[in-house]
Length: 398
Image 1 (cartoon, rainbow, N blue to C red):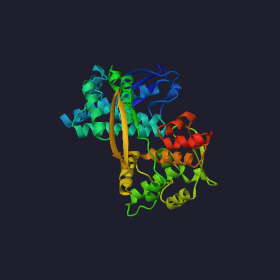
Image 2 (image 1 turned 180 degrees about the vertical axis):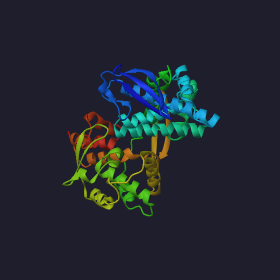
Image 3 (image 1 turned 90 degrees about the vertical axis):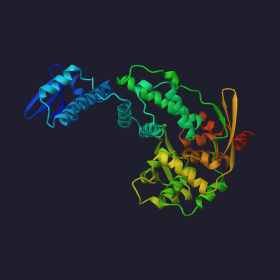
Image 4 (image 1 turned 45 degrees about the vertical axis):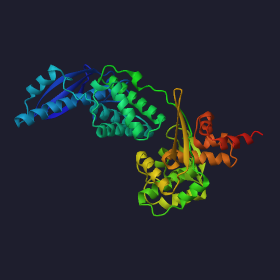
C-alpha cells in the first residue's frame, strides 16, 4: 500500500493519494499552492520559494504518518492489509485526529527543521538542546507532555541543569531554547498556548567565571603525556584555539583549503564575518600533525563531549587554581570556590588567545577583527572582569 501526495494543477490543491494493487483513492489535504511551480513533484513537498512552505510540509508529513499508522495498526490486529475503503473512512473522519502530536514528535520535528533550515552552528545548538531534554526525561524519570508544561516542570528542569553544573547564563539560554521549541509547536499545531513567562528569567550577575589559561598552564597542557587518542585530539584542538582564537564551531569545520600563505581564511559560522588569522609555528605544527587524518583539520567530537573531556584533561594537567566566584540572585550575594579546571570549556581557548594578545601589547581594534566580532563592544566584554587586561589596555592611552 502506497502513500503519496499529488498537486492537482487544475485546482492547485494538494491531494493525498493512497494506492493498493492498481487501485487508489484521492482526498484533499485542504492546502492550495499557487502558483503551482512552488510544488516539487519529485520530493512531493512544497518548495522553499513558497512563503509558508515549512508549515505545510510539516502538515503533510504528519498526515503521512497518520495514514501509515492506520495501515500498520490494522495489519497488526488483523494480520492483513486493510481495504482502501477502510483507510479512506478512517482518514475522512478526521485526518489529524490520530496524527502524532506528542511532545516527543515535536522534538523530532524541531530537530529536523533545525537541520534543514538553519546554519550549521544553529543546528548544533538545537541538537544539543534536544539531547539535553532527552537526558532530563531519562535521568529524572519524568516524561514531558503538553499537559504538564507548567511551573513545576520548568523548576525540575532548572534544578536538573544546576545539578549538572550549568552556569546561570547557560540555564537562561536553554530556557530560551525551550520557548523557541514551544513556539515552533504552536505554529505547527502541536499545542495552542503556553505561559511564556515560565521560560523567561534574568541571569544573575556573576563575577570570576570568565577565565583564561596562563602561559605556564598552556605549557603544562602542551607537555601533557599519556593521553588516549581522543583526548589528545581534544587537547590539541583546544591548544589550537588558544593559538588562533577560533570558536569550536569554526575549528570543527576548518579545512586545509582555509589555510594559505600562513593565514587562516574563514567566514565565521556565528557572525558570518570573514576573518584572516596569522598561523603561529605552534599552530602550524598541530595542523601538520593531523593533516592526513580527515577532511577537516581536526577530527573533533561533538561540542558536548569536547567540553566534558577538556575539563578532565585540564584536571590531569593539574590546572586546579582555586577560583573565587561571586554571583547575585536579586540582592542575595552568593560566594563559592571552584578549581579552575571545572570552569574550562571550549570558549576558554578563545578567551585565552584574546587575553594574551592584549597582555602582549596588541590593540583591541585589531583583536576585534581577528575574533570576527561585528562590534568592538562585544570584544570589550571579554575583559570587563579581568583587571590585568584592563591595566594593559589603559597603558595604550597613557
